[in-house]
Image (tube, rainbow, N blue to C red; front, side, top):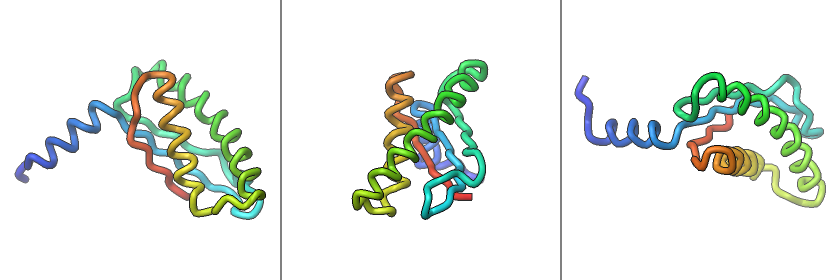
Length: 108
């Protein structure tokens, strides 16, 4: 397999920014989690620090979903939910590490 310039560029970007995957499963009407969110990160911090940050992010996710449910009650479009979470996760890591990782929200 040939490694092209675009593949190298993509890998460089991932190495510089890092990536966060957030897998969520929630009830669409009540915005309550059906199962606990799963968070996986690559390229952000050392493993021991990463677990601390993932635990904190896990706690914050619950707060943000509650915040969003209040916004939804006031007319905020449900389609914006993923973007709402993505932005909050990026801000969380920017405040903690001064990095803006790539964030992917996955619905299980």
